[in-house]
Each structure stands twice: as C-alpha cells, then as structure tokens.
Length: 449
Ligand code: 2IT
View 1 (cartoon, rainbow, N blue to C red):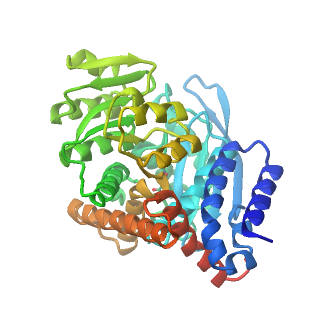
View 2 (cartoon, helix red, strand yellow):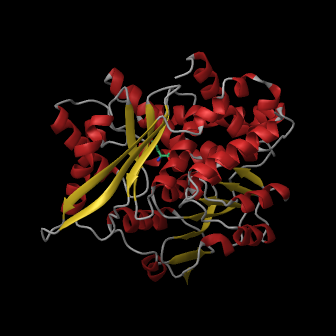
View 3 (cartoon, protein in one colour):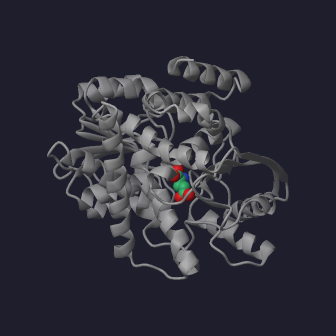
C-alpha cells in the first residue's frame, strides 16, 4: 500500500472507531499528514505498525469524582487520566480542571504531549488528565475537597516512576499542593509524584514561569534565523493565565513591547505597551485577586478595553496565542496577516485552527506549533523530577540556563528535520518528525508491547 493510502486508511479508522472525538481527530490528522515523508523514507515504521499503535493510548482511566460543597450538597464530576505513551519515560503531562474537559479533549492533549515530551530530549512519556470540574467561583475549601476526592482514585495509578502529573488549565500550585498532600497522606510516601509543587516541598524554581519564558526563547531562536530578534517588536498575547503573563514578562525583559492581551471578558489595547509597573499590577490582578482586565483599563488610562474581543485585531509583529485550543480561527489569521504579522508562536496547545495554520504558512509567516514552542513547561517539570531524585534544588539561574538550552535544542531539531525533508522553515513538519522519531524508534526497540 502507498504511504498516502496507508495514512488515509489509518485516519478513517480513527474516525470510525470514535466518531465524536473531533479534537483528537484534529490532532491526529495534523501529525499523520506531516509524517508522510519519514514513512516514505523508512519502511520500518509501517512494517512495525508503529503509528497504528501510537494513536491508541496505552491506558485510559475514567472515574467518578463525588464531592460535597460548602452547604453539604453532593456533586459528581468525571475524572480521567490518559496514559498515552511510555516508550521513552514514565507518563508525564498536566491535569486540567475545566468544564470543557472530555475524553476527546484529553486524548488530543495526551497525544500532543507525547511528541512534545520527546522533543524536550528528556526521558518523559506522554499523558494528560483532568476533570469537567470548574474551579471558578468555588471556595478554597470546595477546591480542596474536590482535589482530595480526585486523588482518592487517581493515587493508585500514578507514581514517581509510573506517571507524574502536573498542572494545566484550572490547576496551579494551589491545586497541586492539595493533590500532592492527599497522595502523601494516602500512600505515606513523600516522593516526586507531581511537578509544579511549591518550592518548600520539592517544586523547581522557574516552573511557574517556564512555559511562557520558553515560548519567548523559542520565538527569539526563530527570529535569529532571519537576523531579527524580539527587541523593539510589537507583540500581542491572548490569555492572561500562567503562560500568557510569563510570556509577557519575558518579552518585556528582552526589550519587546506588549500592546495587547485578553481574558474571558475582552481585550486590552495599550498602545504604550506594558512596563514593569503595569506587569506587576496585571500579575496581582490575575494571580492574587483573580479579577477582570476591566480593572487594568480603569487604572491605566493609556489602555482601551474592547469587550468580548480577543487580541487578534491589534496590529503586531508577533502574536502569541496562549489560552486554549482553536482560539485563533481563519478569520483571525486573515486579520493578523492583513495587519502585517511576521511570527505566530503557540504558547497553548493547538490554539490555531488547521485553516489558520495553512494561511500563515502560505503567506510566509513564521509559525511554531505548541508542541515545540511551549515545551519549556514540561521541560522544567523534567528538571524538577531530576532535582527530586537527587534531593537537591537548583538556583533560578541554573534552571533558566537549562531551559534556554532545551528550547534552543528543540528549535534546532525542528529546523534540521524540516531541511532534511525539503521543507525549510516548516516548524510543524520539523516538530512532528523529530518528536515522532525518538518515540517510534524506542517502540520498535522494545518489541510489540
Ligand atoms: O501542556 C503542558 O505541557 C503542560 N500542561 C505541562 C505538563 C507537565 O507535566 O509539566
């Protein structure tokens, strides 16, 4: 069978088996399409049915999470852990608490995570987990009891050598603390079974900043290839979560100008750009007060608020989507291109729709997929695991230096693979092939398991 036909048949089979899993189809289709050249070049991958195996999770855990609210009323949510691939290391990936969480969304994220973790060069398999529980509007006590109920089941499936969860949307240091504490209580073990822990109980310095910082390091590497840099460039960000804020912080540190960002309520257009005072206000607003960006424009008169809008209408040189999947559509991409965007670097997982990506690539906009550009978060999680194993804590400088090195290596791997397959500048193809190769070769070496 020809490679193209093989890939088409595989994709059709995925759709036939789980017709409702649209997000997983989208992620799988993007990867399968770009792997065609490597499958053509080396017949062993089809011979050993590597891709047929790779699109099936090794294990899916699906459980009931009952918990009581502050009034004593009982609620039930769904809990999941998708252990997708452990060929190159223990399962690793975040936990997401958001009302949109389904089996399909977590399968897509765990699949992506497998390639991302491979790109880091660290021994990390791919996984993702979560719940349709929405922490917004819940009291601290409710969030804690939910985390404990979630852990009452998940604890038996994870371990520092088996599966090491971390945070994702709706899961930050507070939730990791509650889950780690409950795991410790149930198992009577103090081990590095989570990453993203508080620094006083084994968390790595720079882990909260790592994804955002890594995104900017990656963008800088891309621009370097064009003899350019972030310095002096106008940037916009979507999402003001952990990734968005730390992306803004690093852009600022590297001399760039952040003129736009948005949250659920709308977009801020601040032509004068962020400075240290505004960033400090933003961090307090988002991380401490959990407030709306409307407060930002009340305080800083240089800024306009655009209710219900995302940042994409704001003219910029560089755009950083850091919120969630499919947040940047073809229409948004057209607006960005018309406004002269030169680089789009994904801080979230799969934030650009396939049509948006096609447009960027066809118009010569530098485009980096999340699995390469946002791998800094899980990379520092890998470094946290190492620190836990050797029972030492590294300084901020040490961790940031290693993060920068890892992002440079990921960038080089993408560039090299894209060149090897005659698609220079195609970071999507480069990332998929580089990520695939390491996992696929490990699977073949380990036999049919
Ligand atoms: O999407 C991601 O890479 C994460 N949520 C981080 C995963 C991790 O294990 O640090």
